[in-house]
Image (cartoon, rainbow, N blue to C red):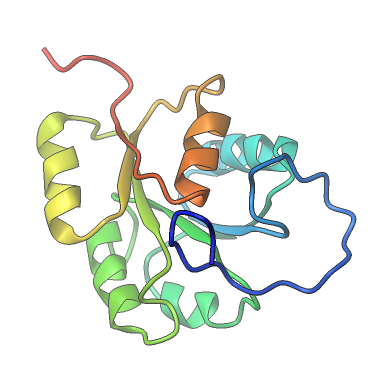
Length: 158
């Protein structure tokens, strides 16, 4: 368990990943995003941080896929997805005994105070509005992975 009381998965010693100080060793993030360029941006930013990421393009079957991962520290979930949206996928993940405590952060272009409040009420653990800011993203992810909730939209709502 980390010093702030958040349970962390047990990891084996070793590994050569370029881990930044303060980040969980061998962290894995599942990115649920249907837009390839958005995924590539997130994957590159996570890669620069030394974080392994996996990708799913829809909320449909995300629980089954996530269950195959040996470790999962965070899910970044787009809200508007084909077949099943982020809210439907969130409900399924929360119903899974193995995955119910994995932090899930809504990531959406529908970045408004109203959407952020809806995500909070639905049970998401955080909110990142698009467009993502490559300068802020590493700090946002570090904060999330160390147990701090992040609820941010990229601009002041008018």
